[in-house]
Image (cartoon, rainbow, N blue to C red; front, side):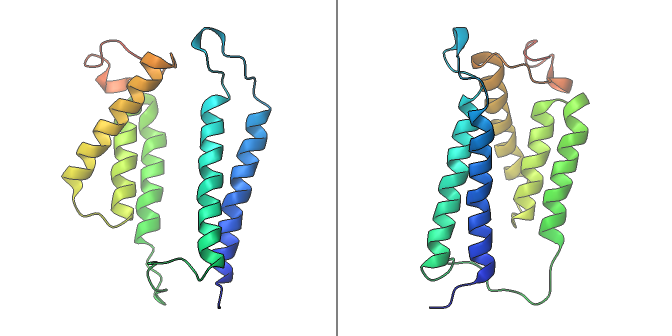
Length: 160
């Protein structure tokens, strides 16, 4: 059985990243106060998710390679990387003055485009729903202030 060293290395690197996140999360306080969950809860969930995904990729890499992965193309196409990078930069630029929802929508739409989606209107609509849901989850349920930005009048004063 031929194993791709790149697939194995990337898979184990993701597991190591998850373990690193878990190690840092273990140093955070766990007392929940009035909210019932401490500041280490969400990072612990993220760490567990990264470890599970890395383990899954490692299993696939060690048992015959990643299935349904596109064949390696000799001509490197930088467009997906550039779309995802543009989304990250847009998020960093927009979050301070346009707000979390606008920045998150831009990030999601750019990443979707980087992954090959050509349906911009659908991607923006889905991104807006997800960004609003995440915004209200953090602001209303977890009592974490996120910047409302341009949408402050519409969001009813939620956030900072």
